[in-house]
Structures are given as C-alpha cells and as structure tokens.
Amino acid sequence: MFNIALYQPDIPQNTAAIIRTCSCFSLKLEIIKPTGFVLNNRKLERVYLDYLENCEIVYYENFEEFLEVKELGDIVLFTTKSKNQYFKYKFKRNVTLLFGSESKGVHEKVHNKIFNKLNIPISKKARSLNLASSVAIAASEALRQIYIND
Image (cartoon, rainbow, N blue to C red; front, side, top):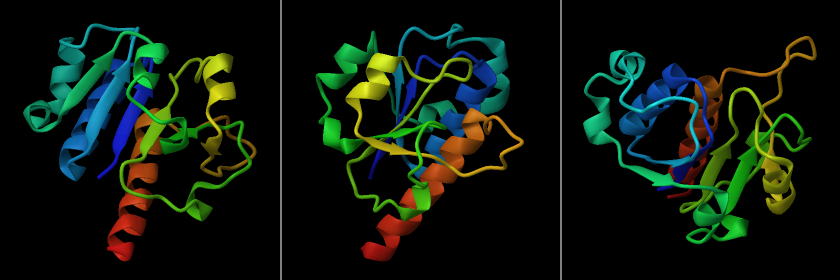
C-alpha cells in the first residue's frame, strides 16, 4: 500500500500509538535513527499491546541509508513549513509519508531534499498537532484516496 516513516522520533508513546495505527491499517513503519528512547521501553508496551506483532518495522541508521532504498519523488514530507494542504495532494500506492521528530521536525538538509511537502492545516493559535494524530490523519486520507481510485 504505502509506508509511514518517522525521522528520529523522540517520544515513545507517540511511536507506540503509530505502531498501533500502522498495524490496524496494514502499513509498514520505517524508523530513521537515532530515536530518543529504547524501543523495548515499558511505555511503548502499554500502548502497542499486541499490535507490534502485526506491524512490519524497518529501521535505518540514518537518513542517507533511508534514501538508498527510496526514490525522492515517492517521499512526502509532512511539515508545518509547507503551504500545500494534504487533502489536495493525490496520494498513490508505494509512497512513503515522512514525519519529523516531535521536538525538532526534520533536519534542514532533509527538508531541502524532499520536494513533496504537505501540511495539515490547523488554527493559527496552535503550533502543531501531536505526531501520532498527524500520522493517523495523513494515513486516513491516503487510504481514502487509494481505495476510491481502486
């Protein structure tokens, strides 16, 4: 279908919730290291319960290793720095939805490499959505579009 990629996530509960989302939607999760936590952390276990066994997870040591197996045109970065709204984008199979870390987003060099950038519009009074919520919103819209077009 498509993949979800997390760039250096640093809050274990968010990653656990994303594992659960990926498991429910049969999506592969790709995690670009380093992370701000150990993945066998007890906080993770409480959220993902038995969902971990139903979620394929691939780890990359860094962004360069991630790019070795990806086409730049097939990566869509979700960022607050884009003016392109996610619901206007035409999602397709085999795309990777990339999300930055909760505290820093993605490094500027990553931001500059990716040319497909989308945002999820929110109130001007808010800074950003929770990472797990953003992943769920983006995945839901991508699935909706892909199923409509099948």
